[in-house]
Image (cartoon, rainbow, N blue to C red; front, top):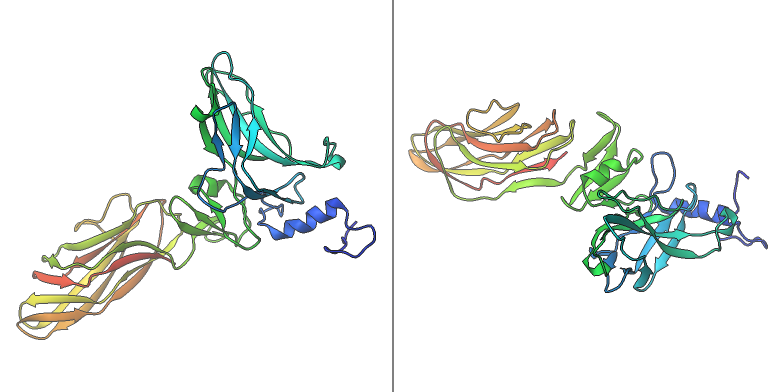
Length: 343
């Protein structure tokens, strides 16, 4: 069958389950190969699976999209805390439990048409391995069960479920490792929780994840500073490594300078580097721009215009920027807000 019936349909025989699941897949985020991304729809920061005073696990309420077969989805809901039992601890060594949820269908040789929770126990070992779970199941969490475990309240439980989102929305990721593991289509967006940054999947300059434009990555607030001659007034840096080929802009708002000197030109520069080390006065910066202002008298305040520049990262390192006194005399400086923004 090439063209399915609509959903909803007024056809007397309804819509076959396979077609229903295929149509529902249009509602969730997709992978690069066109298959739907199964996962939990984020609701809060609380753990989904927790231990309890028995050999079982508490699964909190959630909404999710499961995928019994990879061209369709099932939208499921757990509306109350559910207890999922596991087996007694091993006599020796440790094992890994994987807690999962699965939508079942008789047409796929399942026992019934229910949604079920389950726990798959791994083989006990000195260094236990995570066991495989049933096909089409959505992994929720893992737990390490030692030989001395009597309740899961003492077990180390790790939330491992993937997140998904409505089609076109940003998909939530715990960190960059999870982000890089997603084979997403070009144009997909995601947000990493550990850095609170939004990312876009692009094909240029190479296929990968780049920071979405307009995000402020690092900021240095204004403060009255003594700008000694030919020295750094202040620095700002994004401490996480940025992708190679990431475009960033460095901005500096207008700077007020009090100069005890004769009339003439006063100026400062902003410098930026994509190196592991921070900027120092001797840094040979790959990017630099200078802003100048005319000092009107023997001493007084001069406003030097703000400036900005753009650079492209050439290595997977942080970006640092500095406000630098290019003037040959000492002055007090105020208003020197400096920030780095994704472009």
